[in-house]
Image 1: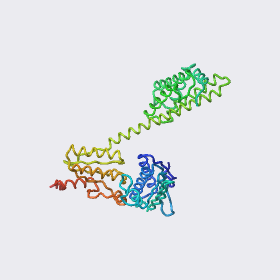
Image 2: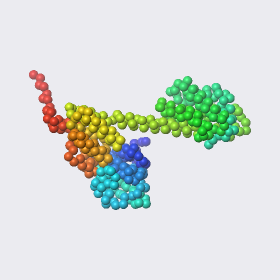
Image 3: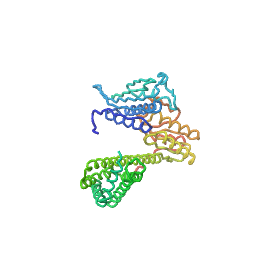
Image 4: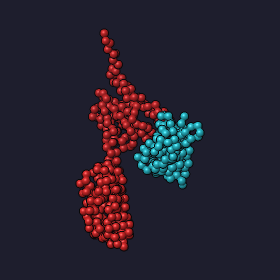
Amino acid sequence: MTAGVDLGPQAQAIRSDEDVVRVRQLVRGVAVAVKLSLVDQTKVVTAASELARNTLVYGGGGSVEVTTVDNGRRRGVRIVFADSGPGIPDLDLAFTDGYTTGSGMGLGLSGARRLVDEFEIETSAETGTRITVTKWSR
Amino acid sequence: MALSAEESGRLAALLSGQAERVTHRWTETVAGSLRGRLSQAELRRQVQDLHQAIVDTGQQGAIDLSADTAAELRATLSELSRGRARQGFSATETAISIFALKDVLVELVQEAGGDNALRDYVAFSGLVDEMGLFTFESFVRTRESLIADQAEQLLELSTPVVKLWEGVVAVPLVGTLDSARAQVVMERLLQTLVDTSSPYAIIDITGVPAVDTQVAQHILKTVVAARLMGADCIISGIRPQIAQTIVALGIEFGDIATKASLADALRHVLRLTGVESTRRQPRRDA
């Protein structure tokens, strides 16, 4: 692989805890490639870690796609998490700090939203959950 | 794709007819690709075993790699690829040991001639492909089990609990803190607290690349468990980027003391225990 300016989209399945680690490494690699600061790298990697684990634990596994984006002035990392799980019935509740249906701290989803610049979520019981996050370089 | 009984018989006859020459040519071809990294004698033995297994299976009837009759052949192939995988050969180098048989076969079939020569060669070649794929599969399986073993060893290696001072133990965490490792860390730390009857424990997370809610939760649980045993925990090694991430995530460490570096944490504990930690004045030369 060349240390290219334009990294193509990179995909990773999420089936196990090890895959969450792989997602982190993948995101870190792309974040370094688009020259995010160390703080932003850590933030986007942590957000990816949270969302990947949600995909695994609550979505029953799924996939991740990491791409670089460019809006002309700044570059960034865009990560799409998709699963075909049961969806999130009450988004407001899910984004409440400390609320969890599992055994975690209830901060992952809301915390991840605070860690990135753009956060989009589409969820339904039929199609599962799809979360798109973007972090721009400064 | 299995060989018919007739084809298998012809293959066995072809291979056993000039056994010495077949194994010699086969060994030669493989040796060329391995470039002397395996002794000639060992390679020869492997090739002879394989040759024997194919001939035996062929003489029993139709060769079908997935059938019971081919159990011996499968075992020989797995043994070969296991050996190659453990000795650090690449997948290609392993598969070539099988595919080299094609070179030998093409010569033999050509010499034997006959109406069926081409059809036979295609069928034999299909069998060799299948054996090659089987070898590849077992090669990958062996490598995967090697990796799993190493992951386990890493788990053992990477969680030492060290005694820093009288009554102060430290756990330097390095790498990813998943549930399995967190469990190991907690057990080791609690056991060491009992063994050394230390009232203070420092958990250093300098080597943890990302602190997400799961990692934080594991650390918090460890701290609570240590507290239940009467020990005070300090978390050290919180770098600026980690601090900012923890704040954004909304994780609260409550009344747990946190420090930027291990040295700060140790100084903090020593102060609590009343140990003097003044810096010695540099000696002045007269």
